[in-house]
Length: 327
Image (cartoon, rainbow, N blue to C red; front, side, top):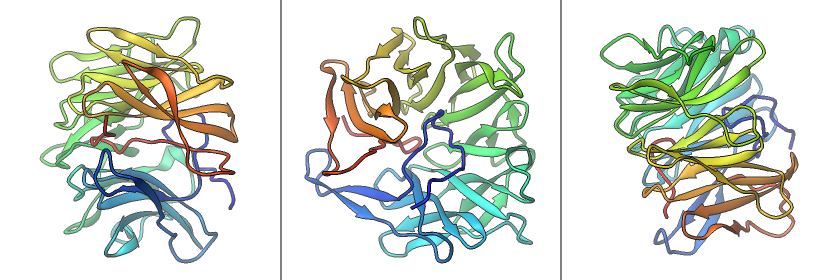
């Protein structure tokens, strides 16, 4: 399998290039198993799952076709299905970023002319409407639990969009030129992302935005440069992310708490936050090609790793937008 060259919003570490879903007969204490999702027809055999609905019945991501990357939605009944294209076949390639908790809305972005990130356009997909463009946006990155609120990269600034209006620009942090939104709370009222300078992507700092408090920075971990959010607690009160090489958990009450590496690891990235906000999953790396999935919780700290089988070189634990991992 060839490695994907598509940059993801999971910081700078490359992610696995196959798709699977972990299935549990009686979550969270049932015995888990892994199920391969397959790939779209044509092209190299390669797919990546990036989100799952709250009940696990819908999975989204992108697969490889003869034309390049294409967004998909998978279900047990239908298998892996392409999300299609905008009217007129606008996109050459497309990528699904998140699925709503109810499984009825998918958001992502596409490339209409091969120009890359600068030319991307955000989209929303539903079974009834198919794929529609969210005008004035570059990349739709996250969606609320009911699919009513979408956030992402609006070009110069992060955006928040509802189906009844135009995208709202969220602003930038002091001293920065640009911003993007990465995740949103279940009700769509709290947004997290990062603010930075372009074209160098320097001076990056994670932020939290709310309708009442506006945008404010989360700061950096001690002796680290930069910060980036990876996941948000459903009510928006807890954010997990990366600052330099270390992971962090942020809350209004505690501020930024550093999550240490597992022994022998040098880089740690959180991928999801539990429904109670006390448990975080993610991946901790020896190098770019050797990673271990981990579980961290407030009581036991970083003392557990997830095994996915002998010979596995890389294990990536990711979140699913507004839905969360079990504690």
